[in-house]
Image (cartoon, rainbow, N blue to C red; front, side, top):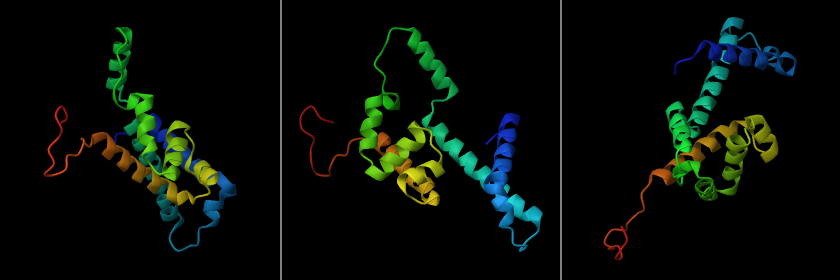
Amino acid sequence: MVLRPEDTEDLAAEILLQIVQGDYSILRQFRNQSSLATYLTVIARRICVHELARRASARELEPSHEERAKAEADHDEAPKPRLGLENLEEVEKLLSKLPSREREIVRLYYLEGRSYEEISTAMHAPVNSIGPILSRARKKLRKDVKSPPRVQRGVQPKAGEK
């Protein structure tokens, strides 16, 4: 992943915020089992990986610059029915296939923009479980989007069906 200078600054600010958060609780957890530099490096790396993974997963659901430009160009032309995930009904249909807990977590994270901590509090779930739940939900949603209708072996489709 290529980082722009502003991304690097954002990550550095996020690292400092995490260190300062809770009245420097991260630094108070240091137990001299390694050097302070190593300890801070591990913390910084963990925060960077978490933030970059969050951005990457958010980017999967956002249209790319090219897709946005094409959508704007299409918007100037005569209105056409939209296909795919842009269609709110399609999103609702896909979300309805998820178990209620996963559906609510996906809704809170992607549609309301809540943080893992906020979701954890709202759903009474450990913060560490939010990421894996979102990951499983994304896999299920991708599978539902990409998989063609199944035809059972030995069963011929009815006339007019594929």
